[in-house]
Amino acid sequence: ETGVTQTPRHLVMGMTNKKSLKCEQHLGHNAMYWYKQSAKKPLELMFVYNFKEQTENNSVPSRFSPECPNSSHLFLHLHTLQPEDSALYLCASSQDLWVASGGAKMNEQFFGPGTRLTVL
Amino acid sequence: DAKTTQPPSMDCAEGRAANLPCNHSTISGNEYVYWYRQIHSQGPQYIIHGLKNNETNEMASLIITEDRKSSTLILPHATLRDTAVYYCIVRVSGTYKYIFGTGTRLKVLA
Image (cartoon, rainbow over all chains, first blue to last red):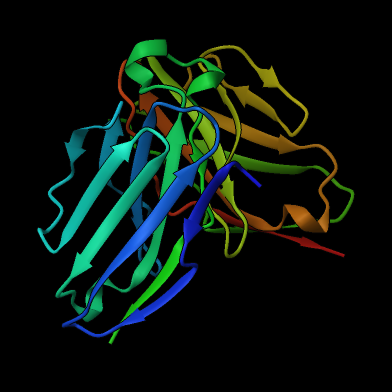
């Protein structure tokens, strides 16, 4: 257990559905991240939040909508997805963004187990 | 950002040392080398990181060459539970971005 939980672990949805992925961290961290891992591709950073404020949107299509109501929770709202959006979606958290603390171990990212999303 | 290259796969006998190489020939002076691993169906897990000096923790050792153009992650006594994809990542100091590559798939054999 890394202290980062994600629900659901598996999700199958149609292209017209609306669903949400949830991430919760129990580590008291200030920064949270969404990553996408497609089959046979490297992890791609999607969004970054620091103290509930979005600091990065890595050119993610608008059909993915993040929400960070507080430093412990992060959501990814999904609507009108495409089959190519099928992937493992990973949430991570870190004490701070690394800008603040250089290379200290405290800035390692703790990943959740991911949500395996299949879009039909 | 500096890029890393790793062999796509490696095998290691259980109980032996696993040495995973990584080339980062374009690394600059303020860039750290991080290693993570991803066991099947789990999120990536931090292993170790370093800048210039060799580092050791309870999980592994990291050997960085003097010119910093390559590094080796050493798992001293590999177990079956070490079977995973290992990622070598270079991160610019002052940024939070990891640039993940495709990693090395390590298979520990009984």
